[in-house]
Amino acid sequence: MFIRTDEQSAHDNYRLLIGSIVPRPIAFVTSVDENGIVNAAPFSFFNIVNNDPPMIMFSCGRLKNGELKDTSRNILGSKEFAVHIVDEENIEKVNHTSINAPSGISEISLAGLTTVPGQAVKVPRVQECKIAMECRLFLGCKLVGESLFS
Image (cartoon, rainbow, N blue to C red; front, side, top):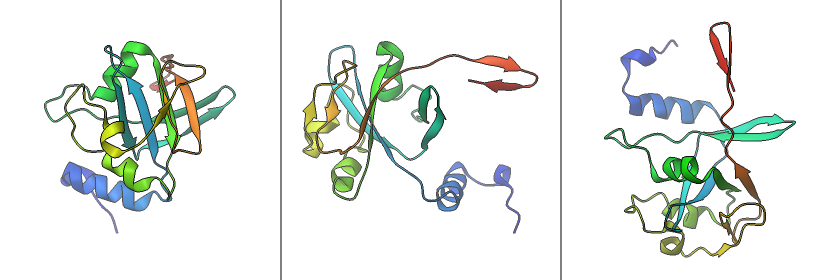
């Protein structure tokens, strides 16, 4: 079978990707806005980038109107965030945070989750998650030939 992604809708391409690349880990990302409100959102486009130095990545799309989502805006502003690994015990509550809550409303409290202070960053971790990685944004790129590597 040959599928032309340029002849499909974005939704069809999304379904193709998430159905083809499995298992697909879920990153549960917390960030903090300029008013100290904790934002939380799950991201299914997430993986390891490097081990030395340890680096992970997740892809945060934009809103339909082209504006940045709260997660991106918060991380670009503070340069800090926390990534949690989702497991079966917390999947329902984490999934609840994917709602389209207005900016300034914390999805953490709406989902019934608990925050604990970060140790290396100002962004809190989620107590119910067994694994949390406190992260700082890395924006380093160099151009090699026709490809962009970061």
